[in-house]
Every structure is written in C-alpha cells, then in structure tokens.
Length: 113
Length: 119
Image (cartoon, rainbow over all chains, first blue to last red):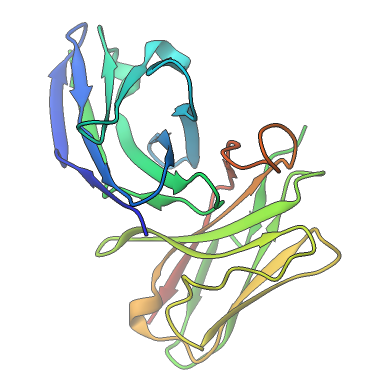
C-alpha cells in the first residue's frame, strides 16, 4: 500500500512570491506521482504527473515538481504566484501496476496581494 | 467534449434512508473511479471499474456501500441505511485506456461531485 504526507496544511503567500508545497510518499513498489488542484467550488484538475524519465516535471500554469527517489519526495513549486493560484493542492500516488490514487490531506494555498 | 458529469449535485437525506448517486464518465473512458472527500478523512478511494474486469472494491467502508457500472458507461453508487458519517462529497473520475501500459498512470478526470448531507 502507498501513503502520502503533505507536510503543510496551509500556506499563505504574497502575490509574485515563490511557493513550494511539500509532499512525501511511502511505498514498497515503484510509483506514479501526481499533483491535483481544486479551485474553490470546482472539481479536481491535474497539474502535472511523474511516471518515469526526467525527475523535473513541468505542468500547467507555471508549476513544476521534482521527483526525488532517495528522499521519497515530490515537492511542487512555482516561482511567482498569482491571486488566481488560491486553491487546495493535493499530492497523490499510485503504484505503477494499479489505477487507484492515494491522496495526501491537501495544502491550502492563499495568495494575498 | 463533455467532461465527467454527476447527479444530483446536492442530496440531503434522513438517517436510515438509501441514496443513489450517478456518474456519467467521459465517452470512451474504460476506467471509472469513485472517491469520497470529507473533512475528517480527506480524499479516499472507494471503488474502481476497469473495462470488463472485476471492480476493485477495496476502499468501500462498509457493506452498506455498493456500486455498479452498466454497459461499461454510467455508474451508480448506492449507500444503504445512510448514517451521519456518510456525509461527504462523492467524486467520480474516469480515465482513458490509451497510452502507457493499459492506461496506467493516465490522468483521471474528475466530475464536480455530489454533496451528500445525512441529517
């Protein structure tokens, strides 16, 4: 079984500042990793995913994440946030031979002017 | 094209009643998933269907929960004898079978959810 820990439940940040959301996972098998975003009163939307290959993954809206196998981490970063990035962000993992996702508890990002 | 749709968007029911929640996946998506999002438990996997294979029911919290998928498309999640702890947002997702290994690792497209309130 896999599990995901998102180390920050809430992250306040000023507009145009950088942000990093931390995610650690545990698994006894190889995994696929995902970041999803949920804007207020909306459904979940995929930001980016890591399946294999380059450990630096670029996603939509200027987000990127780096897979670190030795530290079992998949932290999400954006160099300069906008007010519109205010949302809840979920890190998720699946084993590479299964379809279901295990989600972290989520990180609420609030961007202030 | 159309995304994943769910109905109803909101459902209020009395404790002990049965409820049915419906999900229409994206056309052509062979995999369909149900998740539950609640304040205390976060996002939890409930069940998934993959093509004609037997569903993975490993996330269903009790035998009051069941789901079926008719004709490889629409799915219904049924909760019998609802309890207050069943109150949550129930999310449905679907994914394509193409790419990768039988679609493993493909993006799951989520519907807007059904907010269930058990009084």
